[in-house]
Length: 200
Image (cartoon, rainbow, N blue to C red; front, side, top):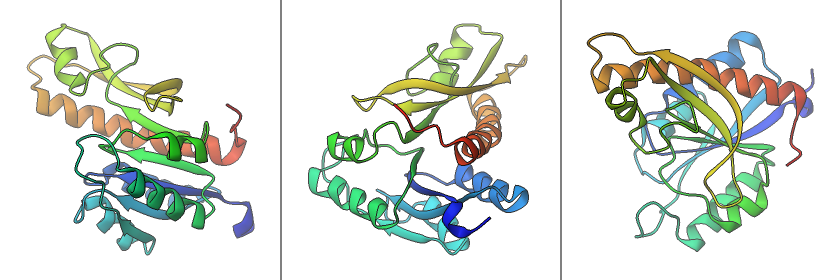
């Protein structure tokens, strides 16, 4: 398969980059028709940037602005330019702590994926694993979804369960959910790389 046939992926993240590392491993191990083109973070020394550099991928820090949870319009425009410069087909939000705005959503309609640590629509809050424990659920999990037109939850793409075991603490359950994410997100990338389901 030629390089031109590969799905070009741009990544936005704020954290350690465990999901990104899992995706890199899946691409290398399974020879997926996909490549990570650029990794962008709103955190100057985020682990996800180190993961990108370790795999010799272009990385970029973008100052997000002063408002919490959103991007300054100029900063968002900068991110869109970085993604478009690499001709990204698909954008992955990997623990990205900013809500995409109109500029980013308009540039990649239906082509931005995010992951949430619950089996949506259950427990949509930011600490869903704690909510699952408090509710006495038998299982928790994670959901990969298309980011909606308002920057929130859109179409559910795939889900994976994570057992809740007796004696689980929030930290232990969060780690188990993260393990499920590390399996689910590469599988979703493989589906998108092979099927290219980009229609809205």
